Image 1 (cartoon, helix red, strand yellow):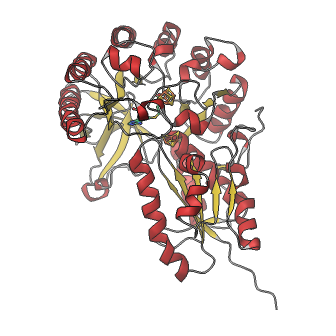
Image 2 (spheres, rainbow, N blue to C red):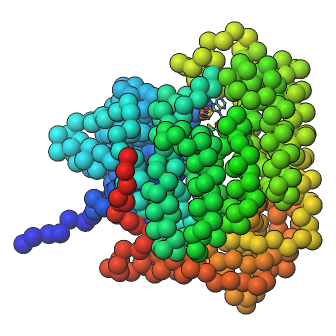
Length: 488
Ligand code: SAH
Ligand code: SF4
Ligand code: F3S
């Protein structure tokens, strides 16, 4: 009598930036193509993959804490395999195995495609496997993918970064910038749209240098305009642009392409010219403010967000005051604020005048207060206004309890929309207009519910995905795709 083995289940735990979120979709796609199934919520998976981040020290600590928790689980669950990939794996190489020898596979940021083979090899040889390549040999878009959302998709336009910001570990882990050809990017977007995707986010560490590799300085603005010509593509976003390389053709393309959303995430890092220079960020505060002024002139309703580092080595109170001044002047809709974290191997790690922890903490709190105050004041200007919301799946856990659904306005503001008793429920991917009744610092509420609800192809794609998940024998939903033909 033969028995059919149950397929092995997997879980992917992701830390870090959108690149990692997107890489995790590829990890999931690869595992599904190799016959693994996603572990249901609350059930111990047979394979646990950590896709790690190394941008700040607390990311390191979190990984080793989690690996420690899994050790007894592994003893109790024979056959459990643990894989560690992403930026920490790339950075720590064999240290991961030295600190956590119960890990089965360590794979680098350029080795995602090898994961299924490495897992298999670790099982048959009963020995940990490690594969870390220094450079990218194949663009990851050639790999299968399992998208998290039916109506939205990430699209990498480049990987790696040629900048040398003195605090940053990313270039050492992701390598030099590799640009994907525009034809390949557009082909992938078209494919996504054909599958029901309405919103894409173009990803790169530095999107405005897109094209350096193939010699077209205006490649990014041309790409935005080309996105504008794709029928059915409702919303286009991108992250992140670098202020030094931000040219006016990008502002014009944003303003003149209706499906490019009025939102811009542009990292400031510091408002002090002295600190920017020590960070080797080659723009100055005036240039940053100039870009914001031109963006606002061309796109008056643009919401601008940023990243700021507090306590870079040598930062004085006067330098910090400059950061506060630029924050005041920029009127950010939101800012991600970080305490400077030493990354061994980066130039800033050995700079003199590291700022004491309590000084950093105190400045950090003042910055967070100011950022929150401005974000709240900006949000309050929306009370009474009507905005278009694209509904998302599961943003905000309180929504279920309060009978609200969440979505994003065109400018990317988070909106919680009350759904009146008996009213038609929007699906993730559907669009509606809502009147803002209340503004909080980090979200908006629309308590009167949606009007002008548009059931979209994105919503249909979501419904199809749900149906497929409930019926295991149904054809594979479009969100699971087995690779794309593209050049490296
Ligand atoms: N490529 C992106 C940023 C990637 S890292 C860009 O340049 O826009 C995301 C953010 O982490 C950075 O913008 C920076 O604010 C923060 N960051 C990077 N290294 C850091 C460090 N050593 N300490 C604290 N924050 C850091
Ligand atoms: Fe890091 Fe600077 Fe490159 Fe961003 S631009 S990834 S901060 S080196
Ligand atoms: Fe972290 Fe790597 Fe992204 S270090 S922020 S996951 S590129």
